[in-house]
Amino acid sequence: MKDMLIVIATFGERLESRRNTFVKLLESIRLLNEKNFRVLIINNTYNKEYNERVKGKIDGIILPFRKYFPIAQVSHSDVKNFHQFLSSIGLDELKASVDTGNYSCFRNFGLVAGILLGSSIIMFLDDDELIQDNKFLKKARDSIGKQVNGKFVAAVAGYYVNKDGNYLIPWTWKNLWWDIFWNKIKHMNKAFEIIGKPPRLKETSFAFGGNIVLHKDLFYRLPFDYLIPYGEDMDLLINARAYGLFFFLDNELAITHLPCPKKMSDWCVYMRKDAYRFIYERKKILEFIKEKKLPSNILKRLNPYPGMFLKRNIYLKLVLTNLLLFFGAFFRIRFSEAAAYLINIKVSLFDAKNFADKNKKKYQQLQKSWVKLVRILGKEQTLKAEFKAKFD
Image 1 (cartoon, rainbow, N blue to C red):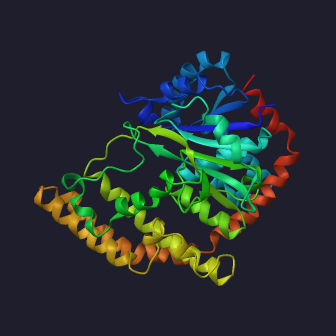
Image 2 (cartoon, rainbow, N blue to C red):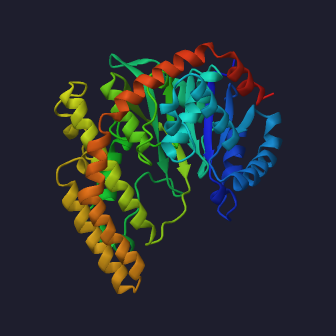
Protein backbone atom coordinates (compact mmCIF):
# COMPACT_ATOMS: atom_id res chain seq x y z
CA MET A 1 0.00 0.00 0.00
CA LYS A 2 1.24 3.48 -0.94
CA ASP A 3 0.54 5.26 2.36
CA MET A 4 2.36 8.52 1.53
CA LEU A 5 1.10 11.02 -1.02
CA ILE A 6 3.60 13.62 -2.26
CA VAL A 7 1.71 16.65 -3.53
CA ILE A 8 3.55 19.04 -5.85
CA ALA A 9 1.99 22.25 -7.11
CA THR A 10 3.41 23.45 -10.40
CA PHE A 11 2.89 26.92 -11.84
CA GLY A 12 2.42 27.43 -15.55
CA GLU A 13 4.65 30.52 -15.63
CA ARG A 14 7.54 28.65 -13.98
CA LEU A 15 6.97 25.55 -16.09
CA GLU A 16 7.37 27.56 -19.29
CA SER A 17 10.31 29.66 -18.12
CA ARG A 18 14.03 29.03 -18.50
CA ARG A 19 14.24 28.54 -14.73
CA ASN A 20 12.00 25.45 -14.86
CA THR A 21 13.25 22.98 -12.23
CA PHE A 22 10.20 20.69 -12.26
CA VAL A 23 11.86 17.87 -14.22
CA LYS A 24 14.92 18.00 -11.95
CA LEU A 25 12.67 17.67 -8.90
CA LEU A 26 10.98 14.57 -10.35
CA GLU A 27 14.36 13.13 -11.24
CA SER A 28 15.55 13.67 -7.66
CA ILE A 29 12.45 11.82 -6.41
CA ARG A 30 13.23 8.93 -8.79
CA LEU A 31 16.64 8.51 -7.18
CA LEU A 32 15.29 8.14 -3.63
CA ASN A 33 15.67 4.87 -1.74
CA GLU A 34 12.06 5.02 -0.52
CA LYS A 35 9.46 3.65 -2.94
CA ASN A 36 6.23 3.42 -0.92
CA PHE A 37 4.59 6.62 -2.19
CA ARG A 38 2.50 8.24 -4.88
CA VAL A 39 3.13 11.65 -6.47
CA LEU A 40 0.26 13.97 -7.35
CA ILE A 41 0.89 17.06 -9.47
CA ILE A 42 -1.51 19.96 -9.03
CA ASN A 43 -1.73 22.09 -12.15
CA ASN A 44 -2.22 25.52 -10.58
CA THR A 45 -3.41 27.35 -13.72
CA TYR A 46 -7.08 28.34 -13.68
CA ASN A 47 -7.55 30.07 -17.04
CA LYS A 48 -9.25 27.30 -19.04
CA GLU A 49 -7.32 27.66 -22.32
CA TYR A 50 -3.97 28.15 -20.59
CA ASN A 51 -4.80 25.26 -18.25
CA GLU A 52 -5.19 22.83 -21.14
CA ARG A 53 -1.84 23.86 -22.61
CA VAL A 54 -0.05 23.43 -19.28
CA LYS A 55 -1.92 20.18 -18.62
CA GLY A 56 -0.60 18.70 -21.86
CA LYS A 57 2.92 19.80 -21.04
CA ILE A 58 2.75 18.24 -17.56
CA ASP A 59 1.40 14.96 -19.00
CA GLY A 60 4.38 14.84 -21.33
CA ILE A 61 6.83 15.52 -18.51
CA ILE A 62 5.47 12.95 -16.07
CA LEU A 63 4.96 10.13 -18.59
CA PRO A 64 8.57 8.80 -18.46
CA PHE A 65 8.47 8.76 -14.65
CA ARG A 66 5.46 6.42 -14.52
CA LYS A 67 7.73 3.40 -14.86
CA TYR A 68 9.55 4.41 -11.66
CA PHE A 69 6.72 5.49 -9.33
CA PRO A 70 2.95 6.17 -9.44
CA ILE A 71 2.42 9.74 -10.63
CA ALA A 72 -0.67 11.62 -11.83
CA GLN A 73 -1.97 15.12 -12.37
CA VAL A 74 -5.09 17.04 -11.29
CA SER A 75 -6.12 20.32 -12.82
CA HIS A 76 -8.90 22.85 -13.36
CA SER A 77 -11.44 20.28 -14.63
CA ASP A 78 -10.94 18.10 -11.53
CA VAL A 79 -11.52 21.11 -9.27
CA LYS A 80 -14.67 21.97 -11.24
CA ASN A 81 -16.00 18.40 -10.84
CA PHE A 82 -15.24 18.49 -7.12
CA HIS A 83 -17.13 21.76 -6.76
CA GLN A 84 -20.16 20.08 -8.34
CA PHE A 85 -19.79 17.30 -5.78
CA LEU A 86 -19.68 19.86 -2.95
CA SER A 87 -22.94 21.36 -4.22
CA SER A 88 -24.53 17.92 -4.36
CA ILE A 89 -23.78 17.30 -0.65
CA GLY A 90 -24.78 20.77 0.52
CA LEU A 91 -21.26 22.06 1.29
CA ASP A 92 -21.04 24.98 -1.14
CA GLU A 93 -19.27 27.00 1.55
CA LEU A 94 -16.15 24.88 0.98
CA LYS A 95 -15.77 25.75 -2.71
CA ALA A 96 -13.67 28.84 -2.03
CA SER A 97 -11.27 26.84 0.14
CA VAL A 98 -10.67 23.97 -2.33
CA ASP A 99 -9.51 25.55 -5.57
CA THR A 100 -6.38 26.73 -7.37
CA GLY A 101 -6.60 30.41 -6.42
CA ASN A 102 -3.81 30.53 -3.84
CA TYR A 103 -1.44 28.29 -1.87
CA SER A 104 -4.00 27.42 0.81
CA CYS A 105 -6.67 26.51 -1.73
CA PHE A 106 -4.62 24.13 -3.85
CA ARG A 107 -3.00 22.58 -0.80
CA ASN A 108 -6.54 21.82 0.42
CA PHE A 109 -7.22 20.10 -2.90
CA GLY A 110 -4.11 18.02 -2.20
CA LEU A 111 -5.58 17.09 1.20
CA VAL A 112 -8.83 16.04 -0.47
CA ALA A 113 -6.87 13.86 -2.90
CA GLY A 114 -4.95 12.26 -0.02
CA ILE A 115 -8.17 11.47 1.83
CA LEU A 116 -9.74 9.90 -1.28
CA LEU A 117 -6.60 7.85 -1.94
CA GLY A 118 -6.51 6.58 1.64
CA SER A 119 -3.13 8.19 2.40
CA SER A 120 -2.13 8.38 6.05
CA ILE A 121 0.72 10.83 5.32
CA ILE A 122 0.78 13.79 2.94
CA MET A 123 3.98 15.61 2.03
CA PHE A 124 3.90 18.95 0.21
CA LEU A 125 6.73 19.96 -2.12
CA ASP A 126 6.94 22.83 -4.63
CA ASP A 127 8.25 22.80 -8.20
CA ASP A 128 11.22 25.10 -7.47
CA GLU A 129 12.96 22.59 -5.21
CA LEU A 130 15.49 19.78 -5.46
CA ILE A 131 15.98 16.77 -3.15
CA GLN A 132 19.65 16.03 -2.56
CA ASP A 133 19.37 13.47 0.26
CA ASN A 134 18.49 9.92 -0.85
CA LYS A 135 17.09 9.25 2.65
CA PHE A 136 14.79 12.26 2.45
CA LEU A 137 11.48 10.36 2.53
CA LYS A 138 12.73 7.93 5.15
CA LYS A 139 13.54 10.92 7.37
CA ALA A 140 10.10 12.38 6.61
CA ARG A 141 8.54 9.18 8.01
CA ASP A 142 10.84 8.79 11.02
CA SER A 143 8.76 10.76 13.51
CA ILE A 144 5.37 11.51 11.94
CA GLY A 145 2.53 9.97 13.96
CA LYS A 146 4.77 9.16 16.93
CA GLN A 147 5.13 10.60 20.42
CA VAL A 148 7.88 13.10 21.26
CA ASN A 149 8.13 14.48 24.79
CA GLY A 150 4.62 13.21 25.46
CA LYS A 151 3.15 15.03 22.43
CA PHE A 152 1.78 13.45 19.26
CA VAL A 153 3.72 14.50 16.14
CA ALA A 154 0.87 15.59 13.88
CA ALA A 155 3.14 17.46 11.46
CA VAL A 156 6.83 17.58 10.66
CA ALA A 157 8.34 20.75 9.24
CA GLY A 158 11.48 20.42 7.18
CA TYR A 159 13.45 23.45 6.05
CA TYR A 160 14.95 25.09 2.96
CA VAL A 161 18.60 25.45 2.10
CA ASN A 162 20.06 27.74 -0.57
CA LYS A 163 22.30 26.60 -3.42
CA ASP A 164 25.29 26.92 -1.09
CA GLY A 165 23.65 24.72 1.57
CA ASN A 166 22.98 27.62 3.98
CA TYR A 167 19.55 27.76 5.66
CA LEU A 168 19.78 31.49 6.47
CA ILE A 169 18.32 34.02 4.04
CA PRO A 170 20.95 36.32 2.49
CA TRP A 171 20.59 40.02 3.39
CA THR A 172 22.40 42.95 1.75
CA TRP A 173 21.96 46.71 2.14
CA LYS A 174 21.99 47.10 -1.62
CA ASN A 175 18.80 45.06 -2.13
CA LEU A 176 17.06 45.40 1.22
CA TRP A 177 17.83 48.93 2.45
CA TRP A 178 14.07 49.50 2.86
CA ASP A 179 13.76 46.57 5.31
CA ILE A 180 15.16 48.43 8.37
CA PHE A 181 11.74 48.92 10.02
CA TRP A 182 10.13 45.72 8.76
CA ASN A 183 13.13 43.49 9.53
CA LYS A 184 11.36 40.36 8.28
CA ILE A 185 14.50 38.59 7.08
CA LYS A 186 16.31 39.42 10.32
CA HIS A 187 13.54 37.87 12.43
CA MET A 188 13.20 34.86 10.13
CA ASN A 189 16.94 34.17 10.34
CA LYS A 190 16.79 34.53 14.12
CA ALA A 191 14.02 31.89 14.23
CA PHE A 192 15.99 29.64 11.86
CA GLU A 193 18.87 29.42 14.35
CA ILE A 194 17.11 26.46 16.00
CA ILE A 195 17.76 24.44 12.83
CA GLY A 196 21.43 24.16 13.69
CA LYS A 197 20.84 23.18 17.32
CA PRO A 198 20.00 19.81 18.92
CA PRO A 199 17.82 17.88 19.35
CA ARG A 200 16.85 16.71 15.89
CA LEU A 201 13.14 17.16 16.62
CA LYS A 202 11.77 20.18 18.47
CA GLU A 203 8.62 22.26 18.55
CA THR A 204 8.70 25.16 16.14
CA SER A 205 7.04 28.51 15.49
CA PHE A 206 7.58 28.32 11.72
CA ALA A 207 7.10 25.89 8.86
CA PHE A 208 7.73 25.80 5.12
CA GLY A 209 4.78 24.84 2.92
CA GLY A 210 7.13 23.36 0.32
CA ASN A 211 8.67 20.92 2.79
CA ILE A 212 6.02 19.81 5.22
CA VAL A 213 4.68 16.39 6.30
CA LEU A 214 1.14 16.02 7.66
CA HIS A 215 -0.42 13.05 9.46
CA LYS A 216 -4.04 12.11 8.78
CA ASP A 217 -4.96 12.95 12.39
CA LEU A 218 -4.28 16.56 11.41
CA PHE A 219 -5.59 16.81 7.85
CA TYR A 220 -8.75 14.86 8.66
CA ARG A 221 -9.55 17.63 11.16
CA LEU A 222 -7.97 20.79 9.78
CA PRO A 223 -7.77 22.42 6.34
CA PHE A 224 -5.51 25.27 5.33
CA ASP A 225 -7.15 28.67 5.74
CA TYR A 226 -8.02 29.95 2.25
CA LEU A 227 -8.09 33.53 3.56
CA ILE A 228 -4.30 33.30 3.94
CA PRO A 229 -2.93 33.65 0.36
CA TYR A 230 0.61 32.71 1.38
CA GLY A 231 2.15 31.99 4.76
CA GLU A 232 -0.42 29.19 4.91
CA ASP A 233 2.21 26.92 6.47
CA MET A 234 2.66 28.95 9.69
CA ASP A 235 -1.05 29.65 9.83
CA LEU A 236 -1.79 25.91 9.81
CA LEU A 237 0.78 25.48 12.59
CA ILE A 238 -1.08 28.06 14.72
CA ASN A 239 -4.48 26.55 13.91
CA ALA A 240 -3.14 23.12 14.86
CA ARG A 241 -2.11 24.39 18.29
CA ALA A 242 -5.62 25.78 18.79
CA TYR A 243 -6.99 22.28 18.18
CA GLY A 244 -4.44 20.47 20.35
CA LEU A 245 -2.11 19.29 17.56
CA PHE A 246 1.63 19.92 17.31
CA PHE A 247 4.22 20.69 14.63
CA PHE A 248 7.83 19.61 15.12
CA LEU A 249 10.85 20.84 13.19
CA ASP A 250 13.18 18.11 11.90
CA ASN A 251 16.67 19.58 11.50
CA GLU A 252 17.70 16.74 9.17
CA LEU A 253 14.83 17.18 6.71
CA ALA A 254 16.38 19.67 4.27
CA ILE A 255 15.44 20.45 0.69
CA THR A 256 17.25 22.77 -1.72
CA HIS A 257 15.08 25.76 -2.61
CA LEU A 258 15.68 27.50 -5.97
CA PRO A 259 13.25 30.44 -6.04
CA CYS A 260 13.14 33.10 -8.74
CA PRO A 261 14.90 36.29 -7.61
CA LYS A 262 12.54 39.12 -6.64
CA LYS A 263 12.53 42.48 -8.42
CA MET A 264 12.02 45.73 -6.49
CA SER A 265 8.51 46.04 -7.94
CA ASP A 266 7.58 42.61 -6.51
CA TRP A 267 7.77 43.94 -2.95
CA CYS A 268 4.66 46.04 -3.48
CA VAL A 269 2.54 42.90 -3.89
CA TYR A 270 4.28 41.08 -1.02
CA MET A 271 3.87 44.00 1.39
CA ARG A 272 0.16 44.18 0.61
CA LYS A 273 -0.23 40.43 1.10
CA ASP A 274 1.71 40.67 4.37
CA ALA A 275 -0.60 43.43 5.58
CA TYR A 276 -3.68 41.27 5.06
CA ARG A 277 -1.96 38.13 6.29
CA PHE A 278 -0.44 39.33 9.56
CA ILE A 279 -3.30 41.60 10.63
CA TYR A 280 -5.81 38.82 9.99
CA GLU A 281 -3.58 36.28 11.77
CA ARG A 282 -3.33 38.52 14.83
CA LYS A 283 -7.11 39.01 15.02
CA LYS A 284 -7.72 35.29 14.57
CA ILE A 285 -5.26 34.41 17.34
CA LEU A 286 -6.85 36.93 19.71
CA GLU A 287 -10.19 35.26 18.98
CA PHE A 288 -8.70 31.83 19.79
CA ILE A 289 -7.33 33.27 23.05
CA LYS A 290 -10.71 34.72 23.95
CA GLU A 291 -12.30 31.29 23.46
CA LYS A 292 -9.46 29.67 25.48
CA LYS A 293 -8.29 27.58 22.53
CA LEU A 294 -4.85 29.17 22.74
CA PRO A 295 -2.93 30.33 25.84
CA SER A 296 -2.73 34.06 26.55
CA ASN A 297 1.05 34.06 25.99
CA ILE A 298 0.90 32.43 22.55
CA LEU A 299 2.03 35.59 20.74
CA LYS A 300 5.26 35.65 22.76
CA ARG A 301 5.76 31.94 22.17
CA LEU A 302 5.67 32.60 18.43
CA ASN A 303 8.66 34.97 18.67
CA PRO A 304 10.82 35.84 16.85
CA TYR A 305 8.97 34.73 13.73
CA PRO A 306 6.14 35.13 13.02
CA GLY A 307 5.49 36.58 16.49
CA MET A 308 7.28 39.88 15.80
CA PHE A 309 4.69 40.60 13.09
CA LEU A 310 1.68 39.81 15.27
CA LYS A 311 2.09 42.73 17.69
CA ARG A 312 0.14 45.97 17.91
CA ASN A 313 2.96 47.85 16.19
CA ILE A 314 2.32 45.94 12.95
CA TYR A 315 0.43 48.98 11.58
CA LEU A 316 3.34 51.38 12.25
CA LYS A 317 5.87 48.94 10.75
CA LEU A 318 3.74 48.58 7.61
CA VAL A 319 3.33 52.34 7.18
CA LEU A 320 7.03 53.14 7.66
CA THR A 321 8.17 50.35 5.34
CA ASN A 322 5.75 51.30 2.57
CA LEU A 323 6.85 54.95 2.92
CA LEU A 324 10.48 53.93 2.37
CA LEU A 325 9.49 51.86 -0.63
CA PHE A 326 7.39 54.79 -1.93
CA PHE A 327 10.39 57.14 -1.83
CA GLY A 328 12.58 54.50 -3.44
CA ALA A 329 10.13 54.09 -6.33
CA PHE A 330 9.62 57.87 -6.63
CA PHE A 331 13.35 58.58 -6.98
CA ARG A 332 13.64 55.77 -9.55
CA ILE A 333 10.89 57.62 -11.49
CA ARG A 334 8.50 54.66 -11.11
CA PHE A 335 5.44 56.78 -10.33
CA SER A 336 2.77 54.08 -10.75
CA GLU A 337 4.77 51.81 -8.43
CA ALA A 338 5.15 54.68 -5.93
CA ALA A 339 1.38 55.24 -5.99
CA ALA A 340 0.84 51.54 -5.26
CA TYR A 341 2.90 51.86 -2.07
CA LEU A 342 0.66 54.73 -0.95
CA ILE A 343 -2.33 52.46 -1.56
CA ASN A 344 -0.55 49.85 0.60
CA ILE A 345 -0.57 52.35 3.48
CA LYS A 346 -4.33 52.75 3.14
CA VAL A 347 -4.71 48.96 2.97
CA SER A 348 -2.59 48.54 6.10
CA LEU A 349 -4.52 51.08 8.17
CA PHE A 350 -8.05 50.37 6.99
CA ASP A 351 -8.78 47.62 4.45
CA ALA A 352 -6.73 44.82 6.05
CA LYS A 353 -8.08 45.66 9.51
CA ASN A 354 -11.69 45.63 8.27
CA PHE A 355 -11.04 42.33 6.47
CA ALA A 356 -9.63 40.81 9.66
CA ASP A 357 -12.48 42.04 11.84
CA LYS A 358 -15.01 40.64 9.39
CA ASN A 359 -13.37 37.20 9.01
CA LYS A 360 -11.64 36.47 12.34
CA LYS A 361 -14.13 33.71 13.24
CA LYS A 362 -14.45 32.24 9.77
CA TYR A 363 -11.80 29.53 10.14
CA GLN A 364 -13.66 27.90 13.01
CA GLN A 365 -16.74 27.62 10.78
CA LEU A 366 -14.57 26.29 7.95
CA GLN A 367 -13.08 23.65 10.25
CA LYS A 368 -16.55 22.31 11.17
CA SER A 369 -17.54 22.08 7.49
CA TRP A 370 -14.23 20.35 6.71
CA VAL A 371 -14.89 17.62 9.30
CA LYS A 372 -18.31 17.03 7.72
CA LEU A 373 -16.67 16.74 4.29
CA VAL A 374 -14.09 14.24 5.53
CA ARG A 375 -16.84 12.00 6.96
CA ILE A 376 -18.68 12.07 3.63
CA LEU A 377 -15.51 11.39 1.60
CA GLY A 378 -14.88 8.32 3.74
CA LYS A 379 -18.02 6.74 2.23
CA GLU A 380 -17.73 8.23 -1.27
CA GLN A 381 -16.82 5.39 -3.63
CA THR A 382 -17.14 7.11 -7.02
CA LEU A 383 -14.62 9.86 -6.32
CA LYS A 384 -12.24 7.38 -4.70
CA ALA A 385 -12.32 5.21 -7.82
CA GLU A 386 -11.75 8.24 -10.09
CA PHE A 387 -8.70 9.41 -8.17
CA LYS A 388 -7.18 5.95 -7.90
CA ALA A 389 -7.72 5.43 -11.64
CA LYS A 390 -5.47 8.42 -12.35
CA PHE A 391 -2.50 6.35 -11.24
CA ASP A 392 -3.34 3.27 -13.35
